[in-house]
View (cartoon, helix red, strand yellow):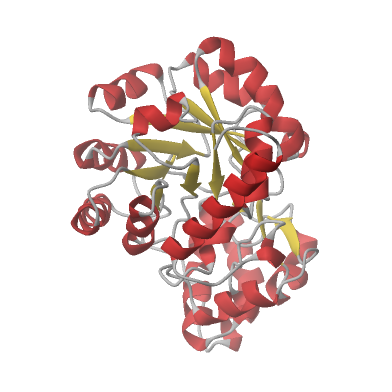
Length: 358
């Protein structure tokens, strides 16, 4: 049965492809949207011009709704001594690939300029993580016709998004791959599992008319039905789509995903300076003693960027950020449209077994 979120976005299925900056592509987003779900572009590290180009490419491929996701962040001014120490730690790793670490020209893209590019692109959905918008910014998005989704890892964060006028909140459990979206309070306290987080968010947000999207460890149609039983109107799935043909990941990353077992992921700050879940590799293990010393995102992310790019080109998974959720052992390589069709079949079968309408 269509939910308010599905009706608002004219979606056939309660499936949102998770935005994965650096790993998703316009082809992936368009394929998911064309198959009845909601394709997303992770644009947190893209320039305004690249955001415009990516949105235009999705529209060239499909006339169905899609979304754009941004990281809510300020441009940092890190202490020079902290940066120097980080470069010193990374130097031996760079040397193995015949490189020397250096300070990048910029730490991150300007969020204000990215926001204006998103507004100009006018996607059906504007979603955000790492922080929260002011209510005036949310109002501008809605005036442009965007459905606004905020990311929350706690009920407090979900309520904060409701207060500024978000249409929906993606309740991201600790099982989710990639960066944690936490922005209020202590990170350790925000490591709440999907099964616990989703119904609490539903209880808090449903009276306010705000939809909940469940995320974290959802890999098949049974999990979609389970999330709906908890009150979620849709699910967001990232890891499941990473091994689709249209995903833009390096072969070494794809191989690591397909080989991973259920216990191969861990949350780390080593690659980016922000807690993120990925498959354990040599870089994570070697720098683990310095978890609490690396510069905060986006500084560490920028400092390791050239290393990760070189590793990808060399086919070396030791120094790649192999972002993946706890459901990684259940990945199924196939075209995105085929995966959506498989998920729909499983979801309908699961709902039928529960006596729920399809």
